Image (tube, rainbow, N blue to C red; front, side, top):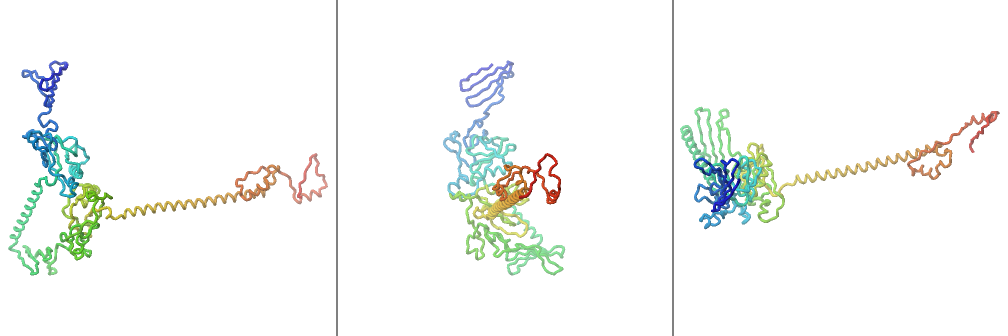
Length: 552
């Protein structure tokens, strides 16, 4: 049994009566948009016991705070714009009409690059903890949170991401609507913001840690100095070289630390057997050990002369200084990358590639990624717009990426890392492509040559076969003639005409028909003829006529 009624203020109630009259349930939809189910409870003087109700608070109403705003029922007011956003209509917002939501305060990197062509610092993400994520998420197959962040960062249309165990990576484009703050549970949502909108707490924390480490090192150095002062002496050699001598409890061990006027620092030990100082180590070992010796995009090789050279695809920033051995200004790129050409409105052209530099000391200030393979590392660099200019993959370290200038590159002649520099396609060597063309042409020419040889071989064999067949036909014709099989046919109609015989002998008729059996006759030799003439007996003793054949 069912019944429904309107309570007069916009609420609608649907009542259900079950076979068991003690069980009565109501479904209520109020004018505020709340929907719930209640059961009649005979206990406690009879009342409705609601099993569940939606929405439990104002934040359960869809889009309560509009786009790019968060709703927290424990705050007052309950709506607030996300960090980096501001109310779209301040008057309405202050009047607690939040449906218009908020707008971004500072454009993201992609938006600024497209509008003014400048390339500012890269965007980042602001973390919102324990929230109900927005609707209309796109699911990505990224299996790590780092990969999920990179997928969003490399796509200008991605404005937020979340990574949740079991659900994995979720990405959002367009407006973010219906974000609700939970006091517990929920997922962490990362909102994309311009660099200037991010907190610099992490940078400040790094600065504090760095200062602490430096201060601690200085304190330790001072402590060591005063501990050894009673056995240490120092002297200036007069040429700018400073020597710190240390004596140990074991007088046979004497050590000097020397800082020369050239900036070289080393440790020497006294060798009693030779009666001289022996260097245990010295730094720098050569000119390439000086930081930034060849400037940005310059490579240093102590075995070359000059020791500095621009990387392939780059040229000296100041040719005069470079030729005079002043390399600190470094080099600059000769051809724009593909993404730079696109941003500047030029032709798209072919995709960028990488130049491999073997056995290198890689530059400082790399970004580390947990890529599992070298190919993945390469794709990560190639997909991070123009800011990634080099990568390296080394077992044990994983993937390293570089942005900005590449400084302090040094060529090693022992085992070291391989560095891959991003270059425009026109700057790359096309040896591999040319080699493929050469191999392809070689194969084609080889196939044609084999086909020609097979053709002429087949023609030669065919000619031999026909000659042999003609020869056999001539032999057969001559043999038949010699055997008298043709001329000795019994009936004239079975014998070939003379012009046919001539054609047979000239091989104009190849397929020779087998002649019919010739007539048989008795033939006498010369002795038989003489004996016959001397024999006085009659020719025949029977009543049979015998015909004698003799030559004309």
